[in-house]
Length: 162
Length: 162
DNA sequence: TATTGTTATACTCTATAACTATA
DNA sequence: TATAGTTATAGAGTATAACAATA
Image 1 (spheres, each protein chain N blue to C red):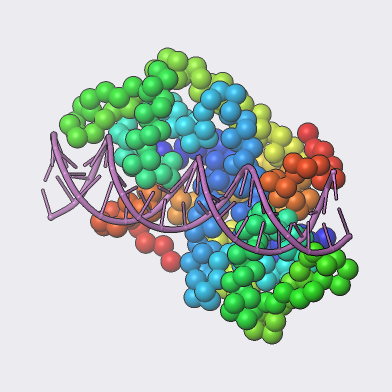
Image 2: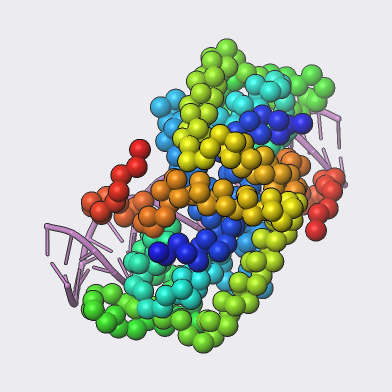
């Protein structure tokens, strides 16, 4: 088997698996006409409405100029809306519209279903353990900072790691 | 925290973590002048020398026309060599040269070191469990087939899943 | 002077399709 | 007819840099 040596490297296993997950997520969300990133955007707005595009860009791991296009399309489809930011007149407050909220619920169900199938080879307690450890690796890598690397240049306040 | 909802979706956690891992792998291998994919290629040749480019492309998850460039550069640097394939005159047998073998050993050490840091937030037995479960998810996703999706069109013999 | 959103430009990467030489 | 390798082309995606408005 040619996956023998690949298996020696968890980083490679993770990389290949993630490529597959991303492809599958695109397919899973295609019936709703949204990309995984746009699902992520709706997801963030469900959590807290009215954030600025810059605030949304970090957790999605995209640059702010990419965020423009993401919001553009969701706004064009009547799923979100740009409003005046209450405290910063440079920024736009992105708000979720009813259509966006309902489409997010559908997407949420589709993604959860996919994840169930993805982890379907594990026993429930094993899946639980896997997800818990995955999150801990995520946090240990410093990925809960929520700031796009391309925006670090001009001295954002980041805790150094390593 | 804006990572709250992201945490509801293992697929998203995995996707973001993998993006980080890929970036880090690029940096880790940069001192040796190779990309993660080229490390993967050397890795495969270490396992079994003389495979055709097509046979190598699958496990690396790249199309055969991308493989051309990968082999080109490694050959230019004297790390690998194209020889005549013993049984198929259309194919090239890619062989590892001594310089390639020694560079692979260095790369192997660097990658292993990175993986130790990556999983450094887990106890040894937890890391072991995580890697085991990761591999099982990988296998359950059917990723040990080793065939590039772009090559599936013309009816390659693949076991269907789902 | 720095930051938010925006736009334009260039660059990288990849997918598609052809072509040749074999099978 | 199908496949291995190669090449060229076009497209998608992304990074960089600039700009206006505001902090």
